[in-house]
Length: 440
Image (cartoon, rainbow, N blue to C red; front, side, top):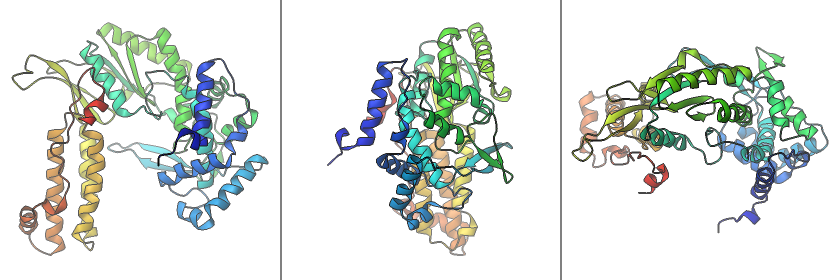
């Protein structure tokens, strides 16, 4: 039997906070700390941390270690430490990871597991309050506001004639947000001193073995960082309603503005730079440009898809032009790289069935996102690459020539069980929510 809201006290708490914030936009909440330390909130927070399968922090304690230590024991200790004011976070472990397809390194701060639980608990409590204020242009890291919701706005607005696009993102957004201005944004809604103190200490990071108390940055990798980023960038969204021109679509720090003319797009870019400068942020020049969506013209990449204005190819659609999208070149290259990793010769000792299982897990996840687009050709290319790699793996596994692998695949009634991606693509349509297409 499904749990109702009354049977879920954490969800009821969130609904109550959301309704209170929505009903009174000027209300400032002063009694929240006791809710962060509630045992049921910490238990829900643990579930979120566990589901994320994150790495160990500076204390080297893993999710498995926590289970062995005793989940109930750890949560009881955290609840007591929070209530009695003893909780102090360990510095986050600072690492740098490569950005896919680029030479840049992305800084990542990994808090200890127990600190991630406290961050998740704080997020559960404060997020509904700020969610009540968020505007329709914001999509990233928000409940029920997915990438495909943002992508549908592009389809709809392009159909309505807004085909001059300002494309950009915020340079080093997570690292550049000023702490003082971030806390000022939080204090517009929260005045609970203990919660504010809790949030301040969560901003500590660790790099090269030394604790750094920076004046800017919400450490990327922290559970609460995306929420804090949205709280701060909400100031951009508010200013845009007064000073901006065109339709802003923001997914965290990645954004486009859709305009009707080049002049409007140029004014939008100026306004975007000015507003961000006032927030202590700036656009990434390498990713900032103005693009016109037109037949035969160039397109743009946004949220993993390449978007391009094309003409229909069927007799019934040749008189129509529309915004099509398919996996970007980078997204397709990453898929091919992942397939190579799964079928690498270093895994030759594994049974073929295990390789097929890993391939299927990846293909289903990848296709689950990119199926909402004009992706049939890209899917065919990725599946062909998967079959080619699998055939080669089978041949090497059995120490035979490559043709042997292809023969086994062709003779198998289901291609050795490899996932077939044909027929699952859902083409987006203007003024039709993408979820309706998913139900068809």
